[in-house]
Image (tube, rainbow, N blue to C red):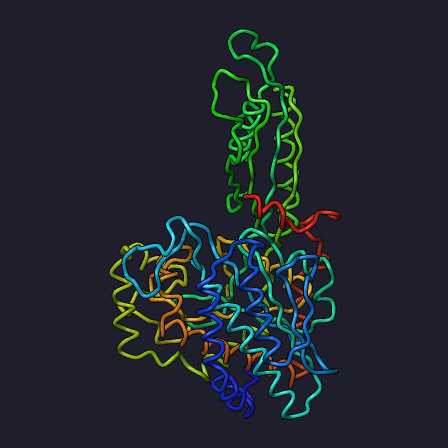
Length: 477
């Protein structure tokens, strides 16, 4: 069922009336790229916009200084829009240039388009707020300013704190090559640091007195590599050595640290795999007579898709159509595509299982499919989707073939084509929120679908009780 109503063109007009202010917000956030939990200026920009739009504001959500909620309206259903504004390290790039040229060498950049993500979500929320006010309809709209999606799992901490306990429907999106509805689940994910403590010694004179923490890290890595043969093939484990214990090979290293990311297709499998990785770490400490401490910094659940909401959003996208890209947009997109490899371009089409076409910008809406596909990445939207029926859009803000987490995404982040894709997606999200407000049947169907997909399993946070958001730990990196 599509749930298209005569009010959708009205709310689309409300989005258009506000578009320039939110384009400016997106561009402002683009110029202050801040990473995981450090989004002070970006959060402040979103807070300022919430104030201008007349939202009631709650700050320091879940004890996270850069997390906030804006709410408007009274009574009725609660419709949540999820926004993000964190950047990525090492992806600095000048806007509009079609060759790699960082603003700051080694600096941050919005290589996943979250400057657009948060701005469009807030634009959708503001338009729906205005509609509630003008019509006097009972209902509440909320904007969730969510930091640290890239590796910090802020939404998981926010869910654990109860911030979504009374939400009826949650709506989000992500910048993409295409326009459409996300019909993929994600991998559950946990980030764990392992610290090993040994004993220093002169490596030649008295090596028998030393207990090498670096040996423990290396043995742990070997053990996990052997374990890969004995876990499901679509699970993933990655690691990075954060501290190898020093630069003197003639000293037995007394301390070493390794960070692991563990991924699984669903939450239960993730929790099991985490315990197996911990046992390998304990074994490495036992073999080297060192002491091991593990710290879970962040964890996210797999996304649970929602068929009624996806179908409603699909109908809205098809009614609206793709953004009105012009010849200048196409020319810029062609220049971006010239920096991509044929493999980049082919991957964008194959990920959607579509026949490849030689077009620079998406001029169609992704068709729906019944198969729920597995994407390779992870997102903390998954935790929201376990406790609230959640739907996500794809927004066409990139030249076809652009891969996320690249300088090409940053280069397009302030472009007219990105702005058009952002505004179009805001219209779709606002109309989806309106459909959920106006249709109790849609809300009930969404909740029934969530209960069915959970298969009787309650939400269990992948973040242990007592673990605080790793704000200080991320600031130190």
